[in-house]
Image (cartoon, rainbow over all chains, first blue to last red; front, side, top):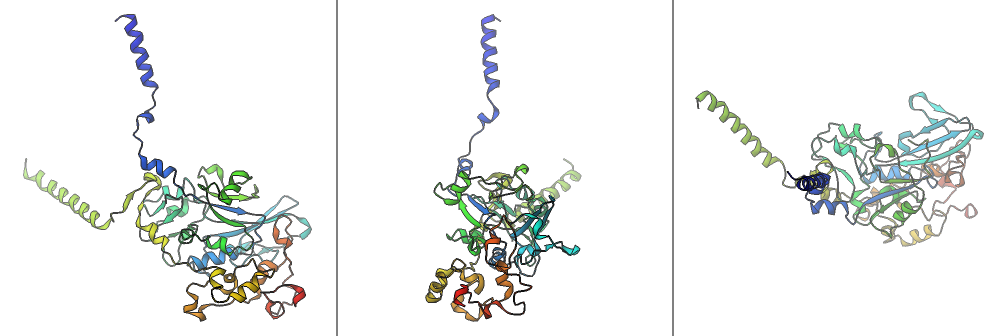
Length: 257
Length: 156
């Protein structure tokens, strides 16, 4: 072999090896379309505006046929009271179905804790609901394809297909899933999919008189919710899990889990 | 080949065929991998439409104004104007078809959801006019004195 040939062939081999395997992959146009549909539902929660009345929880349960008396709910409101000694007191009696009407912190079986009014440094309410994650771990673990992400970003449960194994309930880092007490299948918040597709708000956003909850479309640059998410300081829950949650919070504290 | 190989082999082939036939009957055509791929998009497509067809219960104050326009406008002028009718009157669902189904919540528990005063400096809750439910006429319903459609204290 001549030196010239050797150099030429080496150069070709190196250039060929430098091409990543992904460049040779045939791109499915449907995948590209799924990555950029014109609709991606997101949610914005303003924790300053929330007053802990729990009307959202009541409306959610009635709209989505979750029995009021059952201690499960698609959305709930948590109360955080931080005292000057640095202690964090958090509760959510019945998911705040009946709101927060007393200063006492609910400790479930351990009773109630009275907080000295003068000691309160911060007190606020945090509504919680499904984050409709971009990478939903609950969907990954479903063995039968009963839960899935729609092209517009909502994670739904197929009640006919669910076998009730409970993997998704364990898989959700936010604890938003539960068993429906009547249907005995996995149940979760779906941003009131039946309402938002008719141009209505979610039941919780509808019932909130204070505008603490808002539904928006991330793909619409003129959407006021998208504008807030893009231009203001908003936080998400458990960012470190890599689930890419799509519920954004204004006024999120590090104490909120 | 010998019989003792053919016979179990046929049984296996028959089993596989039976499973495939049952699968073709049981699994609907729209079940499979969709746009989002195997990890997030493996589902029965018809279920999306099933969820879209779920019944709407809360209709909104514009729906109420279809008949009760005077009440709706009256309420909108008051300080409670930003509260939806159905928060207290219950979800309308198909209301005019079945009027007795609407249960108006006039309970004290409903009012104190907002008006039980809580001393929280980092929440709007503390800026809502509030009372201590334990000391403010504890045995009476709020609506006996206060008009929920006109909550102004001057109008009492």
